[in-house]
Length: 74
Image (spheres, one colour):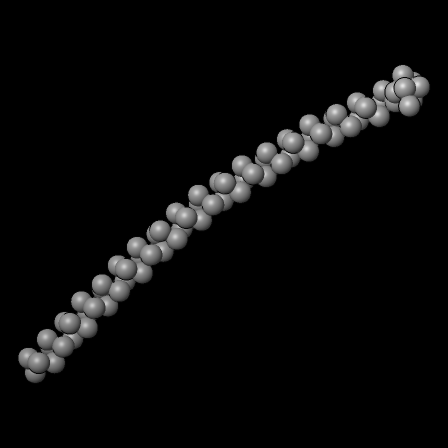
């Protein structure tokens, strides 16, 4: 086993494994960062959707109230 490590092929194998570890770690870090960023934007989107729906619901209620007042005046 030590003979393989001491040879040029063994050194290349070890360097390849170490490089693979660092590249995998880098790619995983980027993916986690992207997921975190996406969750932030997703939560902002849900917040604004709720606010818009609440605003539109209030506007519909106001409009219905005005329609009822007009119908009562007639």
